[in-house]
Image 1 (cartoon, helix red, strand yellow):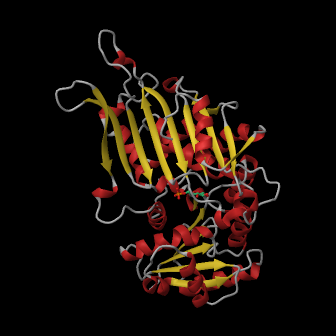
Image 2 (spheres, rainbow, N blue to C red):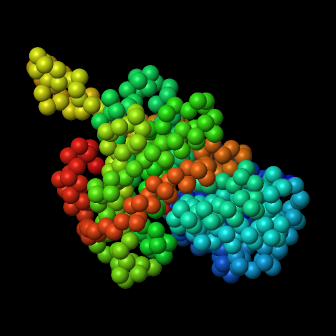
Image 3 (cartoon, rainbow, N blue to C red):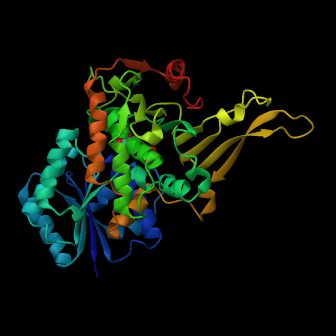
Length: 457
Ligand code: BG6
């Protein structure tokens, strides 16, 4: 008997093929999605389930167990602006039973958030009173602060806050969840975590891929709104927030919001870039000045972080896919008078998020043997090596939490407000756009002006 229905709007989109199908496959394999779940895949295209699956098989890169997935799927063609289509969806859902747990996943651009939310509400598929209905929004939540506020107001009128889930999939990543434990469960770091000990923080998310088939979406957004407003600011807030008063979702979010409200970008220390060939990609305006790369310097208006530069770096078509957080420690103590410790490397803690998950601690040690000179050494922890099989992809964890009504790893409205407000000043300023063919050119530019940036960016 069906007890839960996951309804996915935008089922022929990039997100569905790249992230959601692999996550669903993994949850089915682990038995965490079983026979009482049904998955409704909604899109505009007029096709049969067989055609849809054939298309999906072509688009999904991973080798999935399609024979196990197909029995869960139903394909539904819908016009998202047509009320009769919502009534049809309601009838289909009700035909499975009245008291089902139903989730609506909006894997669509923010311009469709309101029409879908209204369609669900007017047709009474989902109303405020129904605790067993949840609606999930992909990022970016709105196109700017005003738009986000407008969408949120509509949602608050239609639904209860407990029914609303706002996703930032970076929060579901293993090593991002690990930041909390590393910081607060290790006295080694707990007491080294402020401007007296930390010299700089660098948060980077480099991608080697281009915009691929997402030009239509990406061109209206750019790297700042696509990555910094959400993923990178979330990482910074987790790295710099005060220890929450308790280990509870709301207290953690309170601490993050406090930091997000205090992040300020240095308007004159930014580099915006666009990769060579971007204008020829499909879906891109021929005279587009959308940035595909951004490097930013910020500081946090908090006594613990006074004077600590926070660097943000993200972009497409760079030399590699790599996401990490680099915390560089001060060197005062190691250059004491009377000691022949020269040219020492700074201690660094590197939290590696992708492609490999783990932690590296950079230290100075003695060379082995009779010679007493000093060399840098790396202590490395491999996170994925600790588990049987691969660590769960972010979407796997977040979908499971959605099924279990756990919103801890979802973002609260005030976090989104703070993030939009933080980037608003940058967006208002006009920036020179550097055309780049390789990451090396950008790296030279960065290192020329920001000598304290971690050199291995
Ligand atoms: C998404 C962005 O939120 O994150 C994409 O919209 C980006 O442009 C992606 O490619 C990166 O996520 P991940 O998990 O592959 O690092």
